[in-house]
Length: 394
Image 1 (spheres, helix red, strand yellow):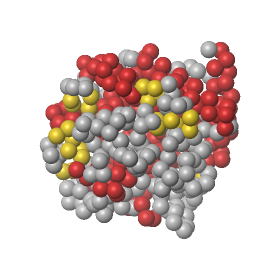
Image 2: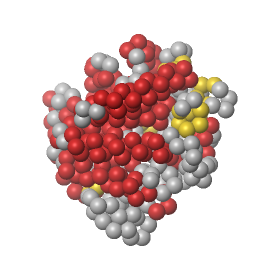
Image 3: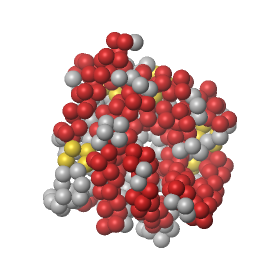
Image 4: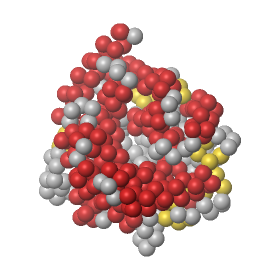
């Protein structure tokens, strides 16, 4: 083990110096990019240069705050607030043509990562009030053209063109076999878990700021969502949370890592979490970590968010979810598998990669019609750094 820990240290040094290479400042609208008031981390320095992605930002920030770059993390949160206040949407990234599409929301989680580092209650409340507006005006607004809230108080992905393909892009899972090319038809378990966490995070922020009535209101909203999700999305067999097709009134039979989000959001019961760990986790676990989907029932064309790919941000979701329910040994085992695979590929290529094949422990399978596999890589570096800190692997 000592040998691996030493190698982790070299990886962490590389990551520390690599932040500067993928940190950008684009203060004015120019070309296809919208200006942002603060510096930010892009996924890579080539095709994603000057892009701040929405959901990437959370997974980058969990690493930045442990790399003593809290100011940069805070500025990234404020950039997203700036975009919402300007456009009434947190777009998937700061490009003009993405203004009609958001991404799975993590603004409250980012805010708490920064708050836990700085303990600034006034700043936290300011950000949380924007997240509250985002929740009400975007994800829960029945008057929008891109209607998200569609069935029993739960939301779906939906872009402004109201197409299945566009909705799948909003999910961040571009592309996947998970939705069977019918993304608009599903109430996604990951999205609604994130919205549940919004509601509990908003309540927590109001409690921290001694606003008990507001906190109670949001706790009650979260409980109502939890009850509906358990009713519609929990499958006793195979003991997992699944997307729900509100047109056919049936669970999806397709299993994906999205089913772990209720653990990350602290929404599942301890009994549910135990069943997921015992019965379902082994289906997703391979030598390099957690695969994104089940192994069968995949589309004939290779899609990058399908098995055998594992993505760094989804590793964090699963590992953090296990930690939330006291499964420390399982979480640490998965963290070491993932980090050892990252280490192996770093030693072979000198780089960290956007995604990996967790079965062969190699760089990931990619959609040739989307874009070439990217090195860099913002959230890969950040998750590695956070896991090293979380399990004291330095």
